[in-house]
Image 1 (tube, protein in one colour):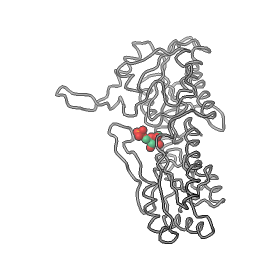
Image 2 (cartoon, rainbow, N blue to C red):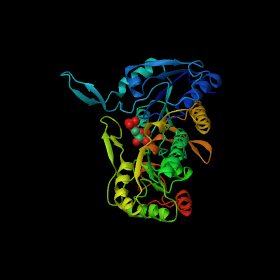
Image 3 (tube, helix red, strand yellow):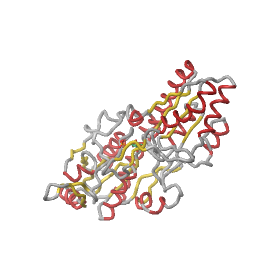
Image 4 (cartoon, rainbow, N blue to C red):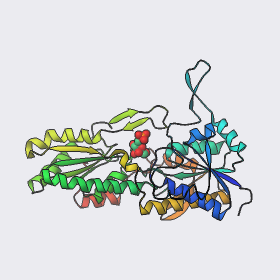
Length: 379
Ligand code: F6P
């Protein structure tokens, strides 16, 4: 056991998801029970590190939080301390690098290492702090499951449960009304939630960012089903999906966020386009439902409780071994680690033509199996 480490910190950044509290609980318990470290938690992501807002973390602090979605430490996805919005002497907002303030705070509290739980934006800052000599360990989290270097992130499977429940509910009303029901799901530019949620929820068509769709091919599927006696259809549509001859649907731009684009409206767009082709032939009505932030909350499922426990515990083990600058990962169901530089730097990002994220392989066995059972993707 390392005798150099006495005190560690935790910070949660980016969008929340189920399993973050499980990871916090696992980190705190491992740090205290196994390694006898002192633990503090910064509040509100990087902004808490800047404003020096933190709480001591004890076994009591993490009692009763395991099943809860969200994060008891609160999140922010707009606080990049390397380009932070502050007021200048004229009272105008300017962006400036305030990362040294965070480093001073860490030193002031004699924090030997910090575990940063987040997605790509949060981990990019984690890398930048590691470059400045801070002892950082990254823990990936996101419902999108798009972090490279790891097979799966906690939050993803609980979000999938919400999607499948929603699709099951849409099925009964679609059947009753002979309708085409569309469910728009999150995931940004990764189609994992839509693909696995759609397969598990018996969707007839799945539209994902990795496979741009031809609306006529989706329409043909619906019409064929209608003509063969299935007068309803269910579509699972990624917020990041796009037609072969079009672009993604942008809902809003969030200034100050690492990725400023917020997607939304793809389901409605598909509904309107299909209405023009399908309704005159079958008479069916189309309705689109956006599942939205429900996917990020609720009660953490069993899988994500276990996964977050493994991630948290392993993160503290890496601290004890002095393996800083790494992100905890799981590959082939074994805990491992990978340099954060490779996750958010040019390494893995350069590896795929799709932008370096962990994305669905359009030729992979999941898509192949889905197509094999008759699900259409519009390609
Ligand atoms: O990355 C998680 C996620 O929920 C995405 O699926 C979604 O596109 C985005 O965050 C929404 O971000 P915000 O919370 O800023 O609206």
